[in-house]
Image 1 (cartoon, rainbow, N blue to C red):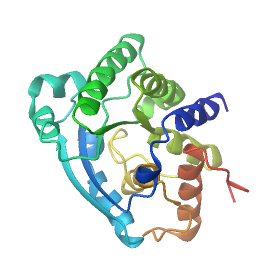
Image 2: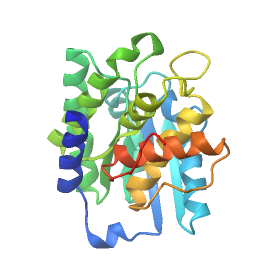
Image 3: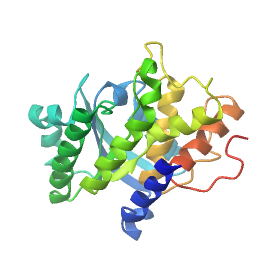
Amino acid sequence: MKALVGLLAVTAVLAGSSARAQSTELRVLFAGNSLTETNDLPAKVAALAATTGRKLEYRMITFGGFSLEDHWNQGAARAALATRSWDVVVMQQGPSALPESQLDLGRWANRWADEARALGTRPALMTVWPESYRRSALREVIASYRRAAQAARTELLPAGSAWQLTWDCDRRIPLYGADGFHPSALGTQTAALVVYGRLFRAPVVGLRMPVASRTARLVQKSAARAQGRPIARPCA
């Protein structure tokens, strides 16, 4: 509950302009690692947009195991950002639950956010998740990303929160892939619902998804709740 209250506070502060709230076309740069690359998260977001008459153009720059500091030093994502071609840059690194990792996330999220704003791009930070054997750390991962987003004044895309809310309803839902860290197809789809819903300010419940109807309803409601939207009977 505390995580959701904090999330609502971030939403209120970072809601953005009315013009952005009504966007039907967005150009988005994704800078992250294999958690974004697995199952092609940006393509899933673009597919959701297409089903509702919206359009997402994107570029994905990912390297396995990269942090935001790694991206800054490697340079490809910074060069892409410098073209001023993007409405939003979506950033993520690893779980960042440990104290030193939380400091690193906050420091580099702030540097990236300042750079993005200076170039006319809206910064966004996507919450991820820990390895399955550390699943109990998910709430700390959520808190770590929330604090980093607040400090850096970035939009928060709470994919990890949607995972947690899904499991609060049904712990059997398979959001992890075979290696117990990277997302399953459903795990990526759940994250995509959050990214799509937040970037386009669009509803996510009732969208067409290639999974059983009960599972689709559950992850959609969880994605909506993660964004602070009221949902009746969230586990039904």
